[in-house]
Image (cartoon, rainbow, N blue to C red; front, top):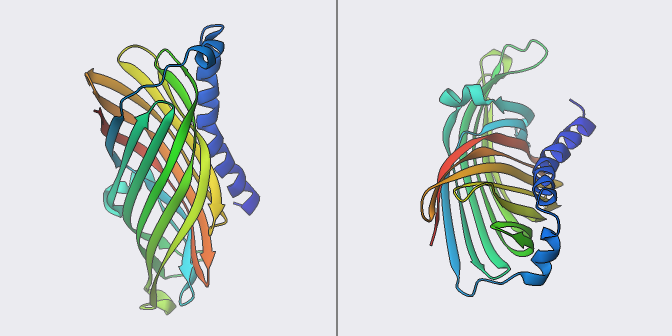
Length: 265
């Protein structure tokens, strides 16, 4: 896959939730947008939402450092049983009126073994631990009948530790480990769309950069409020980053289904 194909795929993933959000806004009854601007009544009390999730994330991309060079790694969703050690995420939101404060934390620990190209007899074992934390805020642009569209922005902090080890063949035993921490600025849209009083859709699309070349995050969720204030949530999330510095490379896309609970207080 060429670099242009990779960039195109990333942009498509980032755009999908925005299409979803736009479709929801356009499907509101005629005049709903106008009513939003003229009749929006901010909530006076703080409202808090906490949402822990399990993420069945597959991983695909290039990782490397100076001692071993850059290598390709992959662990698709079908490989999760023997490659994914830990993958958890959690979101927290504090909202008052049109303003919101957001925290989104993610940790993933994977171990993959991949064959090297061109008929090489060595295999590559990659142990990777990655933490990502988004800290930001939002402002409601549109709101009507339990549905809303927010502009969102903030910073995303990354930490990645990668150990590469060659097994078998001419490179048997060669290994190296390195880690890096970096910060990006990201911005985009978040939306919540009420299908019924108890069924809702949620989505976001964020993109940006800073110390990385490109940083993006997209998700689409469906929730069922099984009791007042608490919802069971399922969906799909994809996020990627392309960071390169002093021989350290982390150009990876993580994507897969998510399951969790959302509680509002």
